[in-house]
Amino acid sequence: MSGGFSRPAWRLPILAVFALFALSGCSLLWGPQQAPIVDATVMPVEPASAPVAASAPEPVETEAAEPEQPKKPKKPVVKPRKVEPPPPVATPAPPPPAPPPLIVLRTIERNDARALLDSEVQKPDGKVVGRAVDMIADANGKPREMVVNLQGFLGVGDRKVNFPWSAFRFTPTAKSAPITLNATAAPTPAAKSAAVQLPLIDADVERSNGAKVGRVIDVLIDANAQPQAVVLDVNGMVSTERRTIAANWSALRFVTKDKELHPLIDLSDAQINATPPYASGMPIRAVSPAPPPAPAPAAAASAAPATVTAGSNARAAR
Image 1 (cartoon, rainbow, N blue to C red):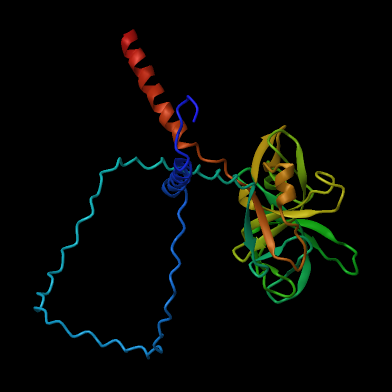
Image 2: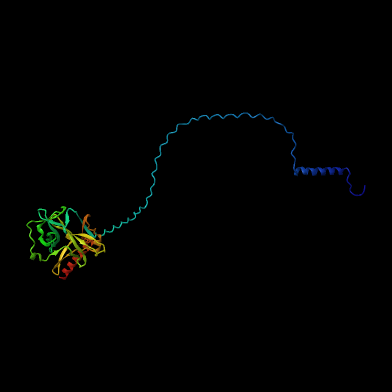
């Protein structure tokens, strides 16, 4: 053996084994460990049994509950709200007043009045002595005389004679000879006939301003020997057509101008156009001018303070 420290030779294998054991121990402590293999034991499985029906629950005795008292309904809470005034109602405007009428018409039955011109005149015994050809009126519009064309023999000796109006009797419903002359009637004296009077037939009827309205072509007389209307020919006054109208006798006025009587009636062209025509076989519609409209109440009320003011001014002036 040499001079160095020597180790026994048998120790070397023991150290190597110890080192290996140390290394394997470290792997067991720190490395993954495998589960031990155990032999599996097969357990027998029992067959599934039918499901057991669930039993009904036993009733549970409870104490009878007291009936609930009905609850009183709560009053709704009404909140006061602001009441708005209703909207103003518009008052409808009054309808415009109806326009005033242009004319006033009066119906005269054919049996109540008869045309004068060319009506036969007879004596009380029924003998026809002539035909009426004219009526003469005074300034008041009252009939004074009738002009009769007395017949001669075969037309020879015909003459016009004036008789007092009171000497005649009228029968409008007579089919012939509606005028009867008294047997004792005498012609009117020439001096009386020369007074200011007006033969009506063919007389011109004018307006107040002198404009011509028409020409008298007939007079309608009732059973009381009173004239009811005049028949006017207004041809050429309003239109070129031949047209006649009846005007109420009361609508006529008589004025004296240049020592002559003139009949007046205030009928405008529009009023004449609005008048129905006069024709045989048709109802007689006699026209009169419509009266002027009455003054409005407001105008009368406004006039009253003016009178008081004028009176007060007059008192103040004193």
